[in-house]
Image 1 (cartoon, helix red, strand yellow):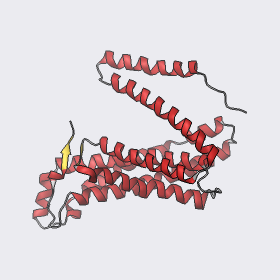
Image 2: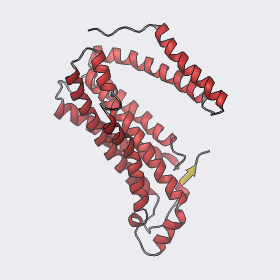
Image 3: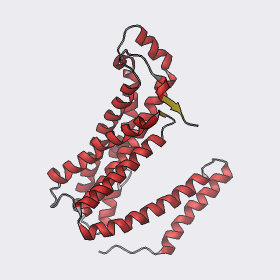
Image 4: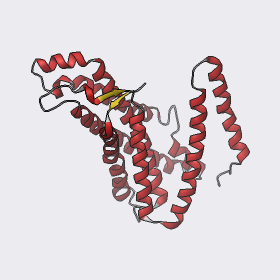
Length: 266
């Protein structure tokens, strides 16, 4: 069974639903109308652009182009992680935390799965490499941004309690342990919920896409299970790395809390 092609009119009808939602949001005074419309336009432009890029990549099988695209995706994901935090680290270090943690988790796990699990030849086959990296980056980015936002917010809110524990002789690890654990839990909740609801409450995107493309349902299920396991591992490793890098930077060698490294975004 071939995929039914979508026309511009079909997409316009779907876009009209978002426009209607924006009007309703404005009517209810939610303050989301502008963000909804801008996000919709941005999403459309980005996906159309990546579609044109992928068409060239699928035809060329150029490993350097794929690595460049992956690097660009990682750099953009690092920026998105930083911008989603209400209280963030000053300077380039905060951006670096996002880039480093998402590279350690998403890109490394994607490379491992391509070489060891899927064993596609060559490993940089665009039809496998780009979608896999993209799914890992997107989900890991969400987990890391939630975790780091929770961490910096709680440290700023409970700074007096942390400093009192430091004055009593506790290490920075001990003084911030509960906050760091709560931040890690926050970052892991979305993927845990996604795994718990998969197949019962929702049909995940990879499985749905493969079924629409004509793949046998059981084969689509296997790929979806693989993707969810990889996302869970990537999110977990990324969250742990981001929380450690962020929290470590907020304490100096003498175990003093350095709140001047944080800035609150209006």
